[in-house]
Image (cartoon, rainbow, N blue to C red; front, side):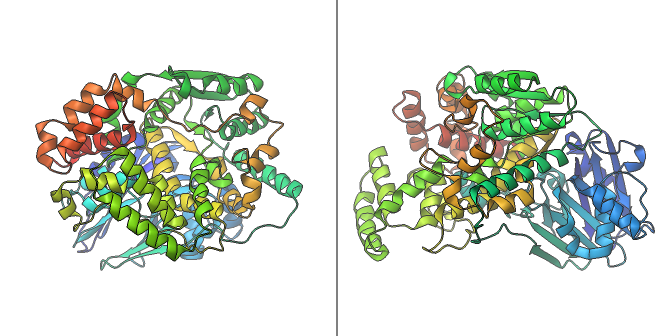
Length: 626
């Protein structure tokens, strides 16, 4: 695991090593063990290394092929590298190291961009082909590893973090207000945009090619399967699911440094722990996070799994003072990010790093097996679909218009949203269900100045949804939507940034792309039933987990944010959002912000998610823009 950075200079000038060093200095936490640089006319590459496989100095980056005509910087792990390495050696390729980085380089020599089809793992890399004067960069299928870039009139600049790019004086740090509007909708900035107008994300499952003339091409190379569903018997499905789960966990135990696992009270991380224990000769190291508020505390359930498998178990209780790390999170995330579970993820990574360098996690179970409760919340609106859409649209429009002339109020807002759902189909319903700051709240809280920055818009940001028609399975559509957006742009960002801030690598067995492809073929009727989601997964692993864990109700990895904002964080909330500096920014109606805070503090209404998102945004402006 590492941090990478680089620059293509279209003028042909020698890229100064000092410039690449400055870029890599901003991401030293991603790779504290070693640094390496390669600079020539047209190109500069740099990497900070966190040593995981082949700890020798010879494996320090950047690495080249036999004749030094191609060079690579790489962030991630390729889990099938040993098989690929053996095949390449049989074909005459020479290797100087025992790790996975060189494998990518030699696959590129053989297959070009098609090499991506061979890789099973998580990755973001850049290869410089000096013969073609071409940069080839790619990101893994599910966006586990980040890749940011900016193209100026004279250069192409890339890195594992936004900070590695904006340190270059040629890159503007002007905010992208449309992206910030999207952030307020979804709690993250969706790919390919970032919070900065001139910085972009390479989307997951995409690669790019950039030549020395400044020509840039971005292409998609993978998508999860579509409508095709298996007709196999349920017993056959569970058997294949177990085989893939065990294989996926086993592959992710390859390491030359200590490993462990993040253990929550759910079945995803419990399954990973059970399978890891079966493959390990000694006790597995497990790490869990809890809260003083029992409504959010999963430690008792995590302990049951730890006791069953006799793990070397470690716990940490997150208290409101833990939010003191908010300025640190703003620094590491580089753009607004309102998923408050970033706080416990940071702390579980911190305590884990004291003993291990690699942790496995249970990320991916909800997307693969329809675990989220908001799937059911969205589905319930289908009961009105017996009425033709055109009729629903007309009635919905009339009712929303009538209610829209009333002063803003919680009850009115809910009624408008309800009629909006009545007059919508699945994609729009799902967007509304997922929204943090709702459209009605944007209309009430955005200033005319903010709306002018959005070309007069009222906050109706849209994602590039997968295709939809009424014949499609809605559960599978929502899961596919999350695989394309929420998973890579929110969950994977949270895990990557919080873990790498502590120089810890996190691996996600449930997001092995072959497992994801198989899960996509399972009919939704086997994934979710009247008792909730993950039905087929629960059946497959029922002998591995305690009954209390296997059948407990789904809970998210959240924090008692509403309580924190009413108590320990109330002062910071008022002092930040209602001060002169925030008012002069001119983005939000100060009267409405005060109303939100007042209503939240007296518990008239829970505004915690909205207030947290706006608080993070304001602090981001103060760190990066002011």
